[in-house]
Length: 238
Image (cartoon, rainbow, N blue to C red; front, side, top):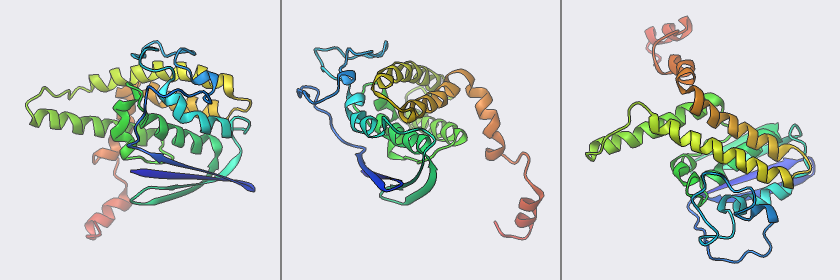
């Protein structure tokens, strides 16, 4: 499955194709890789890899080209971002920060990093320009679907979402360390703000999942249904 991103920035176009199901050869020597992509360079405290496994961080290698392209660009610079998936296309005129956060999230979530690989279902169901509510709803829904399959197969399901909280705590630790990697490579601020925005979303699941769920609860129930919607229901429009 391949997803294309195109950034039109004034007279410049930057294009990226992300193969969500790509493989990563841990044994390859990567002499052209940047110094900050080496595994030991600000390595995540919870990283299970060692230099015997790989000399370079898989997620850093995957992101290196994007970081280089955007390293001198300001986060609030406007761009037209187009995203093409096998099923549909998206287009939005937005700040680089939002478009880049979306692209970087897709690349990281489909990388060979042993921690980030747990996000592969999210990457396969990629939603560009996701809001905080989108992130909470999709993360929770995909996690609960996995628990349903565990239940059907005789394994103990986690309906209390404790595993989701633990995963996002791991992701927060990873994101903070990864931000340290990228910080050294950036002259502008677009990459940094994109990663920090991604970090904020993970933090919301780690520390305030219940409050975040309460915010989206009206979208999932009949609470606070507007009169206009009630009228349409009575008219048989739904």
